[in-house]
Length: 184
Image 1 (cartoon, rainbow, N blue to C red):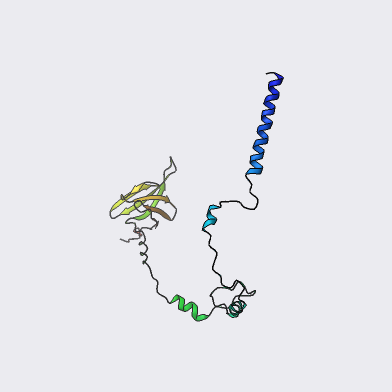
Image 2 (image 1 turned 45 degrees about the vertical axis):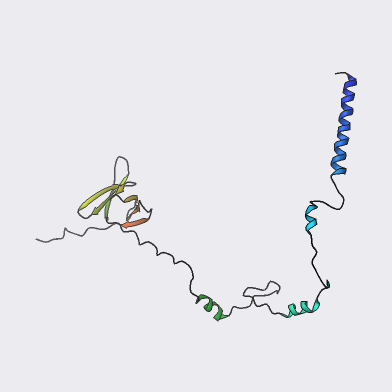
């Protein structure tokens, strides 16, 4: 590109810069007004007969005593003590609305936890339950009686979860009755 062509391109860019600056700074700003002026056509001033301040009404409002149940934010100091009859009257109102359903009954496990053992090879614990005449051997995490899962085996209790509802129960270890003290 020749030097003459470069000067023409530079002059064109300078003219373009001047035009953009003119439209950006001088044409877009209207002194005093900004925003949408079409909404101002619907403006209707209020019909005020006497625009002066009514001091008599202001004095009347100042003389009124605050009677709300909450603290007056315009008075510096401690809030007034509540009246003893007010709270009792508020509590005496009956509850209006839907009644809450009663809580579900505690989870009953139809089995008795009577012992546990540890497997020597893996170290996993196994619990022993009796259900009627049946003896159930259940490892941690396994299902038993088709509706319960053994979560954890402790030294004195076993944590059991009902599979369908997710409710938990703790079954205490039951000592078997002493049968070795029978005399002949």
